[in-house]
Length: 481
Image 1: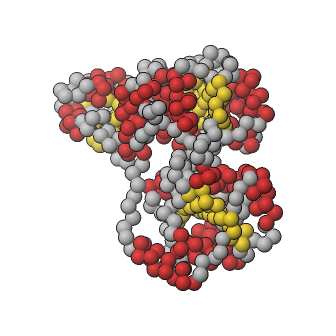
Image 2: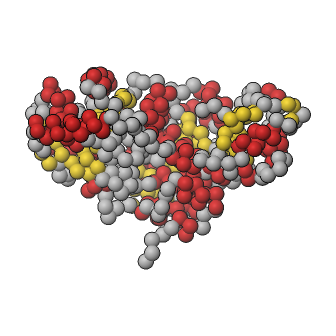
Image 3: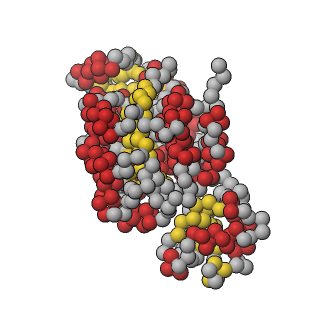
């Protein structure tokens, strides 16, 4: 039987165009099973490991089903971490770009007023952490009356992080006739109880991939004492030459200490931990995704909910004390069909942690020999030569989708009583511009942003010099990044 194609699901042209730009070739197993059921409005429970393509599995059919002209939020996605809420928002935005769907993320540590202003616009999808989502509901800034779809993603992690009561509070405030979709890597009793209480005849799907992620990861360990760890790390970098690597430490201090050592040795690296401000964390992740540096040195906050393509090596500089974190850490590599290497440093008194991990997950983690001096010297020469080559930055997913979209700035907003229809009407009156060429319109107090599709941005900017919006002369230019 031929493999399924995304066209086989009966998706609209706007969604298929985004999927093609995002380079989704054929549906993964979870996508093949989940997409048709969501299109039929079924409640589903999906047990699926991270890295299986599950975000697209629910985002693609939901983007297809959403009503563009509905002004209030239709989709609520609950996730355990800030990074995952941003990632889910980006995935929905990319998939729904040509349908002009608008998605926002809401999470703690970002000012509430920034999020309130976003929620005042026409928003179709909200991806949020439970605490901040509940906060907006109580403030009346998140209207739940027209929610058609609730997605609970990484349900087991929300349980582990103590968010389950907040999730239940949100569930009790949602319309009864919504579709509920729950995704989880494991199914503890409390999660199953949640499903029984709040879901209507859900269909259970368990993805047991024929080529599970763990089988695609070569897992090795080295016995090394604490004061020799950095020396060993350098040897492995020279001999293995990671293209992109996450290095996990147990504490923020260990991350900061290792960052200084790595930078002093000339390695391209940055740190990522809970002590950093959210804008800085977002910037670091985006730079890592683009390939601006090779090594992301991080705590376990980066072990869940972060999807970065082509991570070749995960290095446990400090072995995790919580055995589940080992699985979450190494799952950052070998994403969607690729292979990867997981390296763990173990001191002589930490073997009990390694044994627990091996026994609990039935893993085969092989002891490896420290590279010889000759191997290190040969590898260092190659590594130093590679450093002289200019870095080839990766293209972000959103840039692939946005390649013929121009974001323009217009010098009029809410304070001049400008509405989306006023802007859309003026722009679509330009010869050669159709209503379908106008994307998301984002109106601020004193100015507005408009996405112009089909490579018509310069045409619109030029013609707007001769036009007014609601009788007001305006200035239009390409928006600054």
